[in-house]
Length: 285
Image (cartoon, rainbow, N blue to C red; front, top):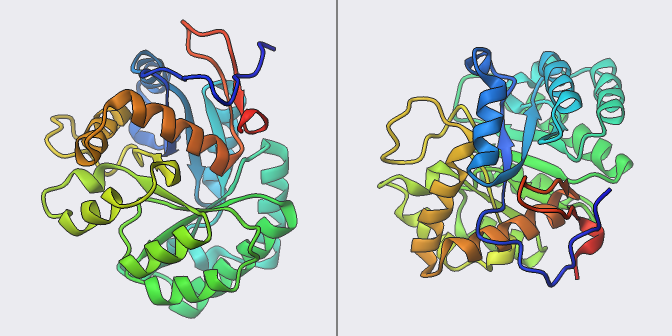
C-alpha cells in the first residue's frame, strides 16, 4: 500500500469525495463504469454509495466490492421504515459487517412525502442509531419536514456518535446543535438553486471543516446543469458554487471537504492516477 498522506499535506485542487450517491440505481445500468471513470477524471477519488433498503444493500455491497473507487453505507431509509423488523435489523448488521460499510444510513425521518407513519419511522430510526452505536459507526441522516422530531431523537444519541446531515436544509437551530456537537453537513445541488437563499446564508457561516460534498446522484442536479441525470463528476460544480459563496477558491474547498469526509466517515481514499498516496483518518492531525 502507498504511504499515508501527511495530515498537513495539501491534497491539491483536484481531489474530491462524493459522500452520497446511488450508483447502483438503474439509471446507471447502461454506463456505470464509465460514470465512475469520468468522476475520477474530474478529480473525484472516491464515491460513497448509499444502500437504503434491503435490495439495495445487495447492489451497493456488490458495487463496493468490485470498484476501488466506491465504498458502502447501508441503512433503511425512512420511506422504507415499514420494512423494519428485528430480522431486518439483524440482516442489516450482517450486511454492514460483510461489506465493511463505513456508516449506517441513510436513516432518519421524512414527513414530506406519503409513507410509513411517523411512529414507524421513529422506531426504525432509533433502532438503527442503537445499531450504529453498537458497531461504532457514524450515521448519515435523512431529514425532510421532520426537524423537530429528528432533533429530539438525535439529542438522545450518544455524544460519541459521528453524524452527517445529508443534503442539509435545516434551520439555524439544527445547524447550531450540529455545530456545537462537531457533526458534519452534506452540501449538494440543493444549495445551488435560486430559492435556497436561507440555506446558503447558513452554509456561508459554518466552519469549512464541518462541510462535506455530495451529489445524491442520480438526483438533486446542480442548478444550470444541462443533463437530467446527476453524476459524481458534478462534485467540482458544487465545489465552485460553495467557493463562490464563501469567497475562496475551489482548491481550498477540495482540500477542506476531503479532509472532512475522511474525518466524518473514516474513509481510506485511494490516490488519483497522478498521485501516489492514500489518505485515511489515522493521518489526520
